[in-house]
Image (cartoon, rainbow over all chains, first blue to last red; front, side, top):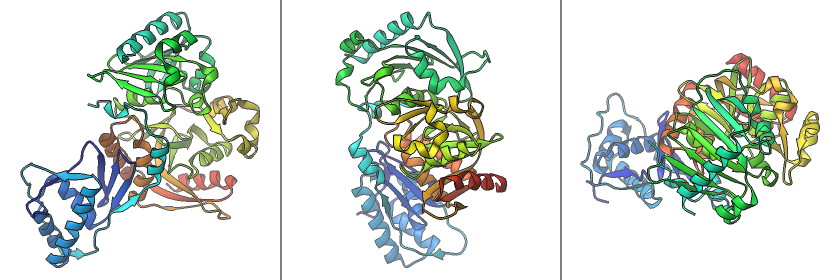
Length: 138
Length: 327
């Protein structure tokens, strides 16, 4: 992974929101849904904003009490997982700055991408009506 | 057959067959709707939609016309080849959506706010008998910022609880138990929500219950409409005054059967509440995913959220009453 890489959510495949700092992501193709708290939620926010991967690491180090090499390793791992699961993809857009972080650094817990698969089996057994995804929305 | 021709066929048949039918005004998610149904299909529709009837004469935002799906229609439209989930065919500009199932063929004109549908009520499975037109209604309501969600709503004196969770978590059981305990009922697994207003709306007044679960809800056996898979019970016929149109939402509850002696509630993290509500309401559903998730997130942020550990069915109503008193 190049430190200047910018990623973006795969908008045709994933719906995501952050609530109380935790990212909730829904893969509309497989039915798998994900949650990432704390550091993971912040990473998702920064990906949505279009912040380059190196700047994401900077933002995590600024916000959390963590060594840079550990933060870099964990950010890379999360971005890799999100990419492999098809939730984000490399973007050609110009990198955006992360918001400045103020205040004391928070305790660091490594980000974890939790997968919930209960709908995956349902989707496989009972797929949606063909054509559903072609419905255009305003 | 191209969607445009299906739409033309359905509209023409409804124009001919439903024209002579009496019109019923409904309140659908806070808005006026007008239902004209051929006498053959009207009883099955009104059994589940009739509780929405109103005397108000506002200009309808939705016109619903329903006629009988005849054998010759099925031959022309090819419904016999449709998968169980049906086929959805939107027009390129998105204005028109056709939904072809084996027993119903519907057309939604999103601009005009009109649904025309051909139905074979005698052939409908229980889940479609209880909840007709769900896909097309979902699209119509989503276009107006209202989400049809996978959840139940019960209320007391206009204060409602949205009960949500994964399939099998006990939403329907909780809703029916509350109904038997005297709560007003708005739906057991398919309800409409205006997140901005924190209001919940009833769509359907009928529920599906496993035949062998009916004895647990003893008072309802007399109102069963026979169907081959599950029993369809029109709650609006059981207690008409307690199947209501809408309610303020004041709490969200996620049930989980624990087998505990007593039913208890405890605060639930917003993240867990959203995980219980959103995926099942978005995946496989005719909703705009990102917008719907955003609205559900706002709703969860706004409502107090609780986990409900369930055990005996008759403990659910009292637990929800206590929760409403404390909220």
